[in-house]
Length: 183
Image (cartoon, rainbow, N blue to C red; front, side, top):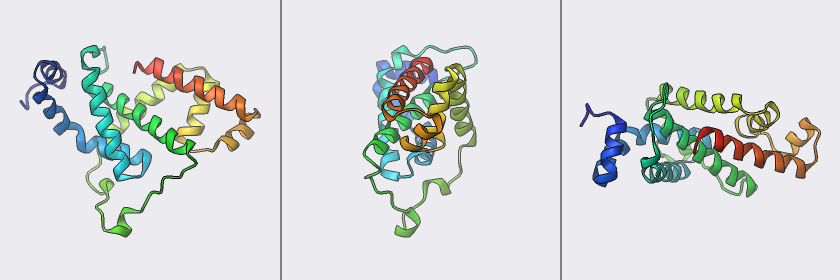
């Protein structure tokens, strides 16, 4: 099984779901680290990864290899979109979710293990490529909100727009991001 490509395993898993566990085994640890870097919560990272694998399996029949893009980049794009959506939900609730420092509670910090820099780089490259294809004003909003962690209020001041205008533009930007990224 080690010599089979991810794309082949995904195709086989559509007929034999037990084969999907091979993909889970290959990507679970790296996905957990990447999701943890976005949400900073082990439990939420686990939820995101579980949701990501469900999306990969559910949409597996739609996967078609693209020139210059592999299964890995497609899977990481789904992971990043799922992480961003989850992060946005947490921010909308006003940060009512409390993140505890794992080191204070003797839990293992998932980032302490070997970091999959290639996977993180692939994901960041994918996100940057999608933002690059977007109109500058919408890409800038996503960058400020998700990557620079600015609040609605700060972004509205920076962009010199009303709060309702900002919310509508962020909605459009997120919708366009999903459309361009192909999820």
